[in-house]
Image (cartoon, rainbow, N blue to C red; front, side, top):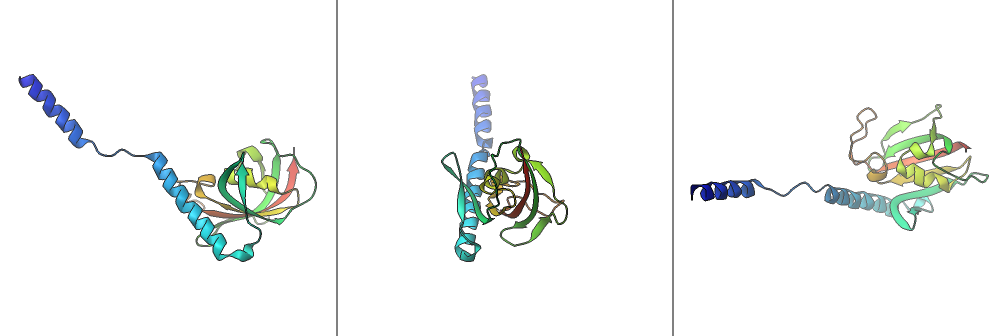
Length: 168
């Protein structure tokens, strides 16, 4: 009888100490909804930014919006191994604060190794083109602070990118 009481006591203690677990997927969904609202409100409040389109990835709306400022020239087939040389400025959409500007330094990247927002939006332009990308945090830097560049976690980012060179 004592054993049964001890077991019941232990089970009661276990259940009493249980609380709702951490739900990462729910947290991601909530942040995605916040990001999407920030971008949609920004677009609605700033109609002069141009012809805003949403990146479609295999028939799925991504929440990444872009405006082609200059289409560029030529015909480029983009792959993950395509090398791009760019000039860009990155701002926090909600404050307009510039947290990175390439200035006279023109970095080159492999398209497969860049932020997902860039990977999906840059193919909308050709060499010499210019694009503005409004990226939800999930396709930019995500839920991670970037103190070295002054970017808080879950920041919605506004990129302006000029595609200087494309090499396959």
